[in-house]
Length: 300
Image (cartoon, rainbow, N blue to C red; front, side, top):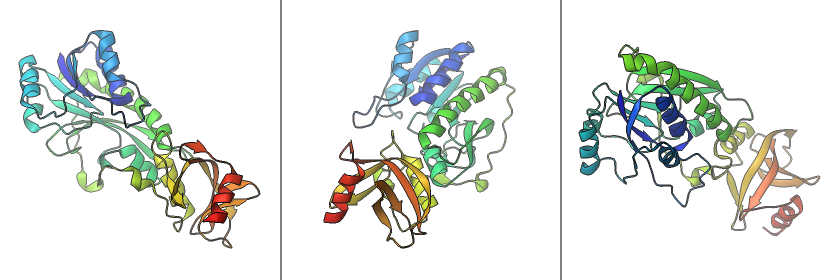
């Protein structure tokens, strides 16, 4: 069986390795150029292709006629997408003789769309997973082939969950691939009415609203904690980014919402009076001490 693979990020690397281990001929990989403005904390699909002598291209637009012609000439049995960041056009999907399949980072139909891990953590979910599904013109709407669930523990950040999800994606593809290649994999209905679609997030979405309950603020921190841009607040025009924090056991209804320093400990006072114990706080890329924060608070 011959496949064309659209892949990026850790899930792209691990799932591509599964295809190779299962004996699939990968005729072409389509990936992305790394964005110099983005923190690259994940593995490289392009490096894996170089290691295995697989042709890899990084077009700006997957809708380009040149890419369509290149894939059409290869006559692939399958097209796979593993954390590739663009939607693939229906005409391109139709080039796969045996079907086109995507690995999505949620338990579909929940959290369709962009950055599903971050959204799941933000909403306080206790479980998510990886779903292999058929690609259609509508995003994350095709039939479900297989799913693997992973837990989201109370203090897990999105980075922690993404590590679990990478393993879940590898397991899902490994277990489903034999039946998929044989043409007898189950295609289960993706009941869209039981889930929701979510869009992309920007760094501005990390701004903390201290009037919200502590659990909501903590979920925001966990959803965007480093290596993502981080939850942030501003004092005197300075951007302060939360690096590490825990939901505090204290209630301080006597203090207004916002940052505070008590007994040399940085706290985030939330709208319900509960606190965040902020263990690391960054200002302009540098961790600052409780004493430095105290000076900022005095002068604001």
